[in-house]
Image (cartoon, rainbow, N blue to C red; front, side):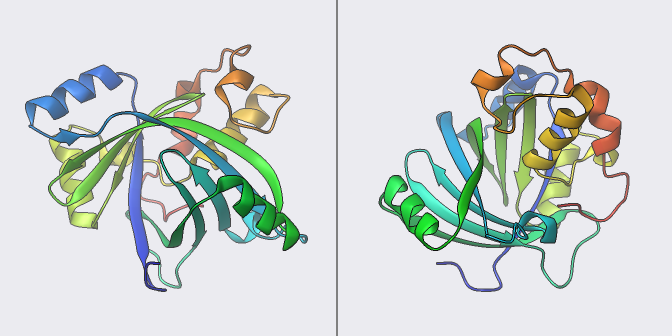
Length: 210
C-alpha cells in the first residue's frame, strides 16, 4: 500500500486526433504498453456522502484487480489536479465487491475505458478511449507534466482538471442521457459530441476540480 500521504498529480486533454498523438510519441521514442480494457465500479456509503465530499471508492479490474480510495489533499495545486490516492491490489474482484457490500457500501456506477500507457521521462501518458471520446491523461510531477504538454503542443489553458465521471455527468445532463453507467454499450445508440462541451471543462487557470 502506498504511504498515507501519497499524492496523484495529473491533467487531461481532449484528443480529437489520437492517432496523430501516437505518431508523435513514436517519433519521440516513447515506450508504450499494449492497450487494455478496464472496468471500474464506483461504490457509495449508506449516506451517499463520498462523491459529494470529493471522495472516491473504486474497484477496478483489467489484468489485475485494485481497490482505490481518493480524496482531496489538505493543500491543493492550482495548476494540476492533485488527489491523495490509496490503492491496494486484491486477488478476486467479485469477492472484494461482496466484502464492500457486506460493509454497507453499494455499487452505484460502472464506467469502462480502453487505455494505452506510454512512459516518458518523469511522466506517464495514458491515452484513454472513453465511450464519449478520447483523452490524454498526463500523470507525474508538475514540471514534468507541463513539459510533456509543451512538447506535445497541447495548449495548457485547455487542460482538464476534472474526472471522467464529472465529464459524463455534464454530458448526461446536457444530452438528457437515460443511463448512469458509462459503458460503450450504453453510448452505442447515442451520438454525443463532447467537443461542444469542452469550453466548460477547460481549466483556464482555475483550481483543480473533483
